[in-house]
Image (cartoon, rainbow, N blue to C red; front, side):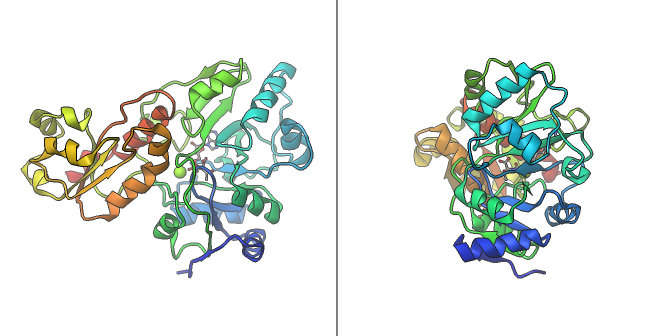
Length: 371
Ligand code: TXA
Ligand code: MG
């Protein structure tokens, strides 16, 4: 067991964290999306430690995080010539122009691009795929750490595999305490959901692999390239849109079910359909509401008498709901409830897409656990 330290991002703290990274060790760092567990992306030993600390299968590739370049370089030159991480020899000139224009608008920020990799990128970072996922986070502490370390940092979310992603240093400590030496303090993450992952196809289409902090409408408004998103439905293991996008993910340890509709419209029959038997109904129940006043809404659920109720955003604001989602799920998971009921996100546009995606995956194991 390591003695995990949470340190402030002072110049001395950043220097200490950078040294750990340069020596092949791991540091949890804040980003604008969620906290990441960072290691030297070009050092296979460090990458192996990331997989071990998270108990993550090596078929699930990592995102490589980069510093903002100094000077006004083109993003693609930076990735290709300076960092030598991508090989764009098969890309047409017009594709390069369009991707450059998109990156100028969205980097640094919560967008991850999947592009053809060079031999310099270790296979462990990409799970043997010919592509690498790249992101330039906009969080000042992440930026300062990457610059201080002087190398690209691979960083999956800093949680044990399949669990709820951390949006505070306390959540990282709860997930990985004892397994990593250092956590950089960065307060609460601004976006709260992971980056949007987009694979650039040779034919010039942008394949969205994971909805996230940049919405699909935002993306499409910023580029003439077609933005393609196959489905918001969690895939079966054999039909994953991207490796690692498993059906069950972001999951609380307690059994939890996604309700079929807004809590105010639920009937007793709906609850039966959830296969909540008498024993379940007697268990201490926790409820995650999307919006509204919990006292008013829960009159509808009086037969359940939940002992813990959390609300994502009282006013139904999507940005606030995204930001609080993982923290509220974690609060319910750590609280007294034994069974969690989750209200679906009623809005399917904007960040609502990504929120629904996370709620579906968080509850995908639900009934199996009770059986
Ligand atoms: O916001 C974020 O992206 C956060 C913060 C820490 O930056 N990171 C994050 O990493 O969410 P992680 O490891 O939880 O998600 C990485 C996912 C993989 O599960 C996989 O679906 C996708 O990125 N991915 C990575 N490399 C890929 C590749 N070459 N091709 C397709 N998908 C890839
Ligand atoms: Mg993750």
